[in-house]
Length: 219
Length: 172
Image 1 (tube, rainbow over the protein chains, first blue to last red):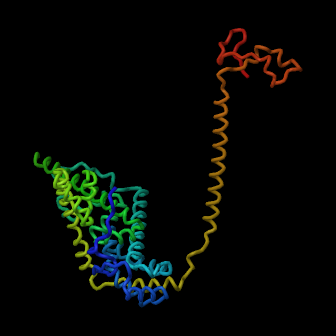
Image 2 (image 1 turned 90 degrees about the vertical axis):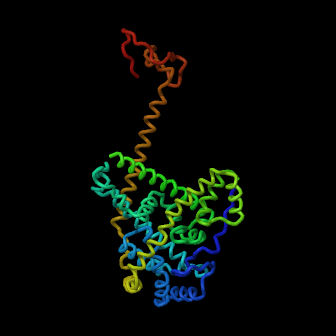
């Protein structure tokens, strides 16, 4: 059986908004702010908001590209954190706990959107999908980032989350485990699976693109 | 190490998620296995595409949200929610009553369907491979000494006895 490794020392952590800092214990300033926020100090909580808001927004936008929706979710994440401040264990770091709230809220939002789409009377799914050779393939206009986003969307939610948090946002595996409420061993396994799925989806996309190119060359 | 284990390690290696001892194990395997070397190259290529996304969103974010903070809105909302703590949390009796009614209806329907299923299964089970033919001994019913539990005078015949024109269709 394969053994699971410890998180890398050079991994980014969620302690500070944009600066990597790897530590399992919260910093002194954060402890002070969290203590204040738990006692109802608005200013202390405000400082926590300002520390984390950009990073939270960045993570949420990986899942929700719409800037306005993402900002609403950031606000709601902080409000929820404020309301649940008493449930937070101050001996632990604030960042992973906050990101867990934010990611859960984001997934709730995405599920709601999906459900609404499922029951909508009219959807875009019925559109004619036969490619018109006279019209250029719109996928050609997508840049690499958009193509990667499209491929990422093909990966199941549980795996995509791990991939986004670890590979795109640079969280260390222990933080990903905390955010997703799973063990580190599970995260490591999911990470390996997610990368494998991404590779397979990416190669499928390349094959499709190649086929399209060949068929257009024939015309 | 076999190729399956090596592939698992390769998936982790492309994101620098291997320990030093695992890296050594993988390197040892890849020296010997051309297939895993090719797999590693393909995986690295796919990962480079994925990692190209790493900087994009943050660049957008920096331009879009520079100087803006959600704190003013969050702070206002915190005050508003504190001012109206439990006003919106009112017990909805109508929903509760509707739920109870639906649940009762569901229970009644389940019980009914179960009893009808039991009745139909009883009817199926009670079709014997050997049937008892009462009409063969019609005086049996007129005998005051006879009791339904007394099977000594009943005739057992194979199921679906052929109908004779004299007796006609027999029914119980």
